Image 1 (cartoon, rainbow, N blue to C red):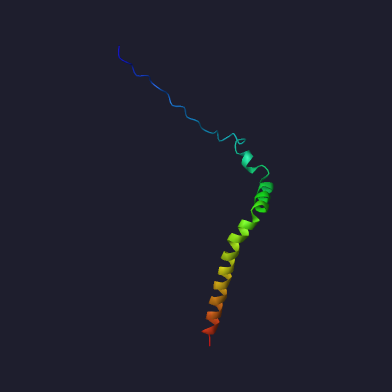
Image 2 (image 1 turned 90 degrees about the horizontal axis):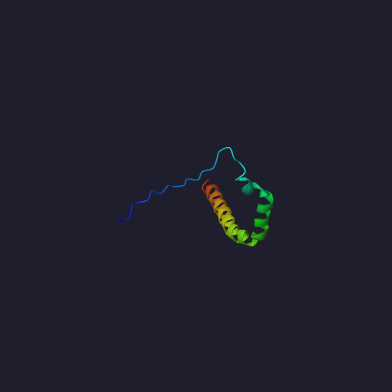
Length: 72
């Protein structure tokens, strides 16, 4: 009259190493996707990269000037 436990089975999903069609959607038209993302977000990318590149070039120039100043 009590409840009897019911055994449950776990379902395990796995990809076959021989089936390559699953990942094909990621690589389809990859250059077109990249160019679309770049053209869509070029302002944000410029605003992010310009200060980084400017700081890097300033530091390199400063270090080079400091090396040359201590030379003589």
